[in-house]
Length: 311
Image (cartoon, rainbow, N blue to C red; front, side):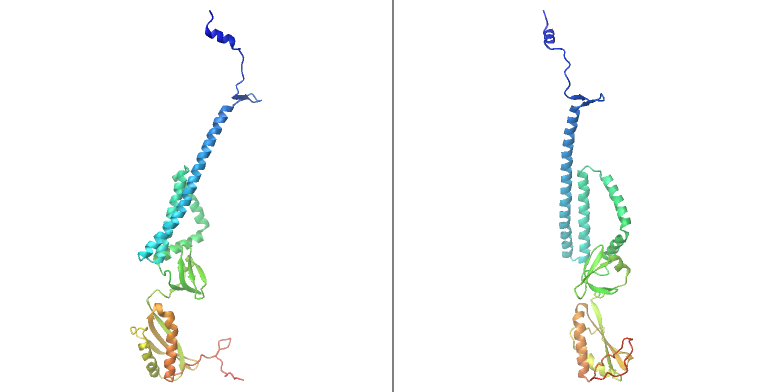
């Protein structure tokens, strides 16, 4: 009696069917399509994972930038409320912004699977190249740090550097912004400020204002003092100590130069500089002492000896 296995073997023809998962190339090599299908599936799965990681990294960097700006403003306002100088508060706020943002960038690289050690090595190499290429710019940064640490001036001070002067509006790591009296904004490189003689007109709370008035030759100093001293003593905004200085400085062009020095508060300098000059002239004229007009000069800065005739 035939077994079931023999019956199946007789029913199934002995035919070599082609393997649909493999094909034979002209050179005789065989290519497994099923392996390619698995590779494509893995590539698609890996691509979607990479896209997700890149999106998350970009999201971390974007949120880090927004949060770092908020943190910088919060830090600066908090330090100002704590009675710190605005210059120092702005510097600390800027440092906080860049530290937090740099930390977020490192976290984004970590999300993408990039080693922090290799990232720091890359940043170090890039930093070295940038430092060499921007060595002049980095000198401004170094000078800006020195200005912020040593604080020869602060925001709101009136400074003078070479031919430029004005009120300090902002101090950054690269330059210092100054507003002139004509409301022009001047950007001064920090390295130039650090290497140049700087005059801070508002550094001290008390300042001396000086006036020079040409008087007729032969004017009595006692008469001048008698005319000026009562006015200065009665003025509510001039200091009695140090005492005002009144004296003849020099003789030039047939006149004698009167010098008057008075001490006042720095914040009232602009106002009193003009009002005191007017009061001085009025006090002298009230005592029959006239102020001589300056001598006329030609283009060679020589005194004109011939009088000018009016037609």
